[in-house]
Amino acid sequence: MDSLLRSFNRKKIVDPSTLTSTELNRCLSIFDLTVLGIGSTLGAGIYVLAGDVARHDTGPSIVLSFLIAGIASILSGLCYGEFGARVPKAGSAYVYSYVTIGELCAFVIGWNLLLEYVIGTSSVARAWSSYFDSLFDGAIKNFTISTIGEMHASGIAEYPDVLSVLVVLILTTVLVVGIKKTSWFNTLFTGINLFVILFIICVGAFYARPKNWSSSFMPYGMSGVMAGAASCFYAFVGFDVIATTGEEARNPSRAIPISIVLSLGK
Image 1 (cartoon, rainbow, N blue to C red):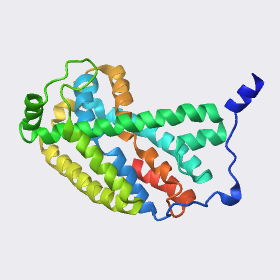
Image 2 (image 1 turned 90 degrees about the horizontal axis):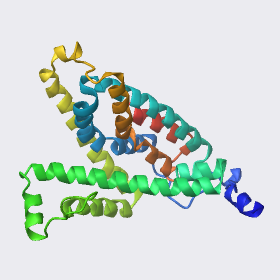
Image 3 (image 1 turned 45 degrees about the horizontal axis):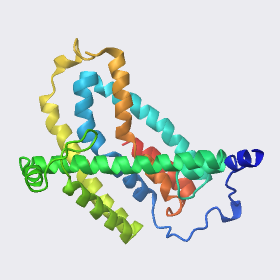
Image 4 (image 1 turned 180 degrees about the horizontal axis):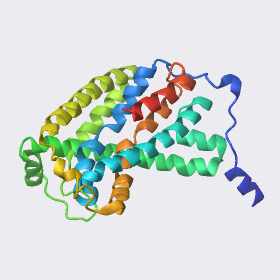
């Protein structure tokens, strides 16, 4: 029993002399890591989640929810930055918990990370597919249902979303090509993403209603703001992907903390 408990608490020993040695290509700069973090956080959380939370939980006070979620994310990001500077290894929270807490905790966190990335990737791909299909008035959905059929089961999609699967396969192919090519691809689409968001902000400013910032600013009360903040935190999830590049950054001890703070401060 004692031996089993010791194995659960066994920690990974990192040799300081080999802390920065790696077989991977160290080619990512602070700019590359920052864009990677921004690209990972700008997605379904901004385009889909914001409207849903504002409608059901917060109303116009969603700005407070995003502010609270942003502060929580910055504090979390500083923790990741500290660990990334001290243990510049690939693996993110799995490696950090393995080094500091023990093997059992690292095992649980490792599987949680896998679940997080699977759910995050699939939800973004599903949201992208839904928006793309809406441009064609649901033609892809109707064709799929008429050809393959519907799935009448709770907890899963109404129909097999082939388009979202194709999106995941394309992104997987880009990742397999190499980290530098992936960085260029990510920089391109992050630039397009930022342009779209700035365009929405500029156009939406002309449709803003100042009266919503008075009596109806917080229609669901402070409880709605906090509930919205819990959901809006998802919009900031993704900065931790920077920590997974500990063996591909040129100067990880400096680049990881700086890029995490910059990506969250966008």
